[in-house]
Length: 75
Image 1 (cartoon, one colour):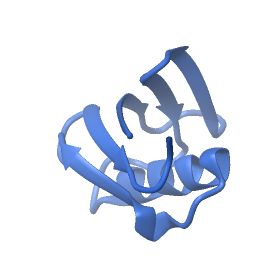
Image 2: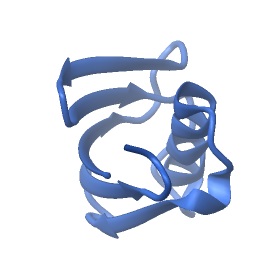
Image 3: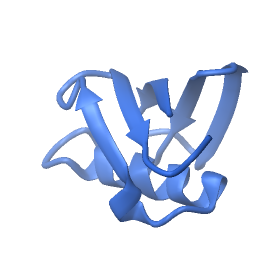
């Protein structure tokens, strides 16, 4: 399953908001340097969808706030 995520780094709390069926907003406390915000977003998605972090891959937008993420083995 592929979803679109808008990441908000340097947030006050961790939060994942569902906008649409395949669109989310992820708020993470980490800064966008050294891939820290991406790792926090992957951990947030892992907890939300109850899948291992290894099953989550960033397809597009590695250095952007807008990302396309593939969740493997999720229907």
